[in-house]
Image 1: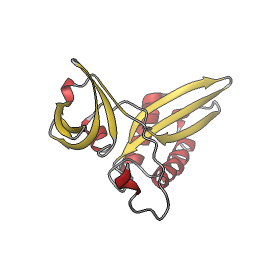
Image 2: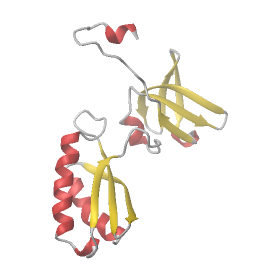
Image 3: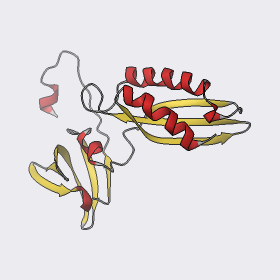
Length: 163
């Protein structure tokens, strides 16, 4: 399998659906290979691709790969998914797509946890315990979304306010 040829084939297909190829992996699994494509994009609400967008992209990619010599003749399994919430945030678009989420940043002076309020220019605005803090993306060593467990009760409109 040729990674470059696969990426060149897939990227224009994804662009039609306003998606991006975040990562491509080819893993040998016995006589087969597993081709993993991780997709990203703004999605309908600006927070990443929807399941429907991923499904549509998967169908288009599958057809294109079947018609292309990029994967060669060896059998393979295609896996397509979003980039995932556990992936580090490395670009401004990643921070923008995670506005409202709790993140943990590693900075030269230590770690900082807060909720992304906005992304402007080359900086991320965080709410850190009720205080606004502007952090330059260039100063961030690592950034990851922090998982939050919430129990939404159907019909309870005040559930968000109590948390």
